[in-house]
Amino acid sequence: MSTLLTEKKLGERCVICEESKVKGIHLYTSFICSDCEKDLIATDTDDPKYKFYLNKLKKITTPEILS
Image (cartoon, rainbow, N blue to C red):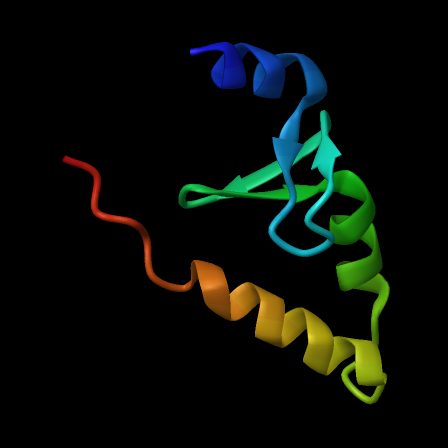
């Protein structure tokens, strides 16, 4: 339970940069921080970073089964 409390104070782990951040969005059960969201939106499809983002986003295409 202390891990949950610590996570709430420090934010959530971004699925792209893998850092704990406070501000961001949720896609299904995954979190994307505001910094990565802005960078992702501004990245052209010709940019090599675009492929990096696609690979990271593949992690969240299937929502987890919550029981």
